[in-house]
Length: 294
Ligand code: PLP
Image 1: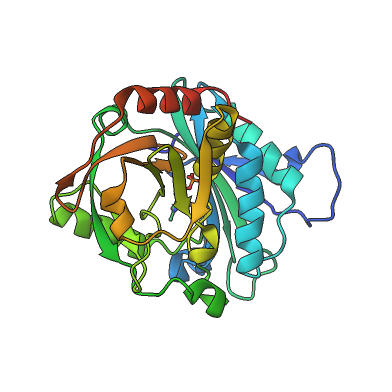
Image 2: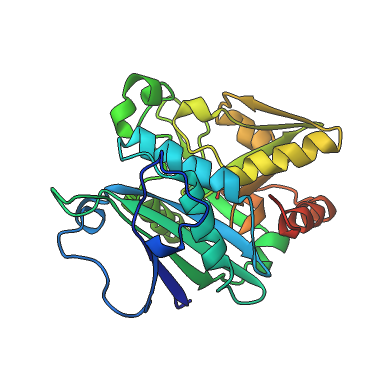
């Protein structure tokens, strides 16, 4: 889908308190060049980003995304983002969203080498059609992520809990999954624990308990998983974080990949073994995820 709108943002100091940041925003032609060739985001993937789902002009979970952008920036030692400025950028972008589903991307790059400030921008793109993934489900294969479950704590410079722009590995994993005849992948740690998908979190149902891998184990803490957990708690259901051995994947009664734009995609096959899809529960989950959420 073609990007419909772009907004260049001059990042404000985190401490700056202003009611209106509109003079730090400049709309830009999304099809025209806008970045310097010296940009470290394009040369090194050195920056952080967020993808926010938008439903009929309503950006979902803006606060969780803006907070995670700040968390990622902290892990990457980028200047602390001004949260209010980013909230206002999201509101400006949301006003440009087409009806139906769309995506607002927020990008904060280290900028030009030795430059004065980071580079920041936001874009608006219509969302793809995920009806088949949401209803019929996805086939996944497990892929070795190449590090053990303790790597995130032992080696924070790997930036494993940050949503950085370095997604080449994630995209390569998706290509490998497609090569193996699947739609998506689930990463496993080298010592055999379940991590996440290349662009989604994993939630399993085992009996009447929902479990997701603990975010301390080198994965991104998903905003959709958090929102689903809030919803499940509201329904009186048990939803927990755990260190999940790979063997539990095939023992699960149901499983979903959840993310901000595709929302809940039930898993119908893992490494060639069928998994039951709970269609009514999944439909209710996606109805919740499509309702306005703050
Ligand atoms: N894990 C990874 C690696 C991701 O890239 C994403 C989203 O793109 C997620 C999990 C899900 O995060 P969210 O629910 O905030 O979209």
